[in-house]
Length: 187
Image 1 (cartoon, helix red, strand yellow):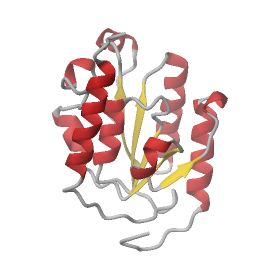
Image 2 (spheres, one colour; image 1 turned 90 degrees about the vertical axis):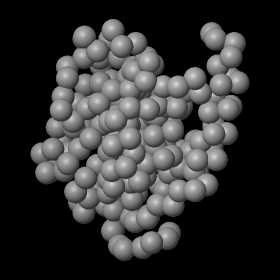
Image 3 (cartoon, one colour; image 1 turned 180 degrees about the vertical axis):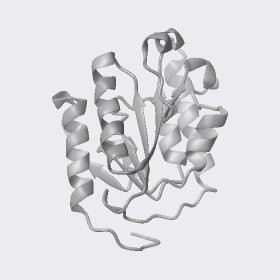
């Protein structure tokens, strides 16, 4: 392990907090039924888990949702083995700065997008994805409960990550289907 990594992450988190002070975002509840656009963030682990993401994309497309997925991939060589989709963009290690902040055209576009719902499936707390979620202009951010996530997400679900990604996706969708949408600038 890189002995500088904890220091770089600490500085990266500090810089992120400073960047967030000047940012305001419109918050609005959206149920899955009312949402038209959905952003998803996920750290690539293996092919089996990625199939869960592909199934989620297919399911949401069947429901006529506009989908955009941002995946962090630790090794760019792995891209040769992953099926490419128009709805999926990848953040590679060479696209993050020294403090692990991602920077590319598609990352900036993802952050600027006003998704009705942003689903954070970053259960390993990969900092480049945390950064994207924190800076996202999404109206309603949903993810797995974690002390670090409390400031970034609007709905936090206590889910046991040991049950697997398919379980987490199923539970998030269940909650998003059960809430009722209403207009609110603050909640």
